[in-house]
Length: 374
Image: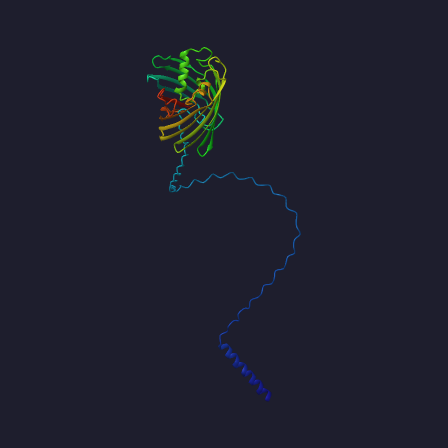
C-alpha cells in the first residue's frame, strides 16, 4: 500500500510538470558553427614536358578605323615672345690715313698724291714745283686678317719745276720704288708694320752729263716732298729702305709713329756725285681723329736727318742742311661706294726750321691726296 501511494505521488508530479511545460513557448536552441574540415593537401605533380607550340592563328584583317570624332577646337596658344635682339658686334675702329708716313695697315689701295710747293729766291721771286706720286699695294689673300698681312708696294713719281725768272725749269720721272709691307694687329688697338723696299737708279737727270733742267726738277722735288722721299730723287743711287711703324687705333683716334733708314749706294754719275754712299734717317708722328664717320682731321710732325751726309752737306758751316723738321695738317672725307672706299684729303705743310723755313726758299706745301681702298 505504501508503495502504491509513492507511485501515485510520482505520477502526479510528472503530470503537473508536463502541463507547465506545455504552457510556456518553446525556443529552438541556436545552432553552433561547425568548423570546416581542412582541405586535403594534394601531392605536388611531377613536372610535365611543355606541350608543343600551337600554330599562331592568322591575324585578322585590320578593322577600318572608326570615324574621327568631331574635334573640339583648341584655344590658340599664347604668342611666342620675340627673341631679344642680338647685340651688334662693335665695328673696327676707323684708321686715320697719314699724309706722308706709310700706312700702318696692309690694304689693297691705289693712291694718287698731287703736291704743289711754292718757294722764293733771294729776290723774293716765286717758283712752283709740282709733284705727282702714284702708289699701289695689293694685300695677298690668306696672309692675315682684314687690313693685316703681306702687301707688295710700288711707287712712281713725276716732278715738274717752274722756277723764278732766270732759273732753269724742267721735269723728270724719277726712281721707282718696289717693296713690301707686313702689318699685324696686336690687340688692344695696337698695330705694327714692317717695311722693306728698294729704289732702282733709272730716274731722269742722272749719269755723268744730265740735262740741267732735269737736274733742277729732281733737286726741287726733294724739298717739295718735305725731304721725306729722298731716295726717289737720288737717281744715281740704289737705295735699300728698311722701316717700322706702330700705331694705336681706338675710339676714332689714331696715334702713329714711324722710323725709316735709307742707305743710298752710288751706281752711276761718279763725275758729278763724289760720295759713294750716304745714309738718311726719317721719322714721324701722326695723330688723326674722326669727328664723324665721314670726316677726320690728321696732323703730323716729320723729322729727317743725314746720318752719313753728302759731301756738300758736310762742308756746310751752318749745318742747317743736315736735318729738317716739318709739320702738316688737314681734313679727310670718307666715302664708301660698294667695296671701294675713297678717302680724299688736303693737307698744308710748312717747314719749322731751316733750310725749308728760311727766308730763302721759304717753302709752303699743299698736297691733294686721293687714296682708294678696295
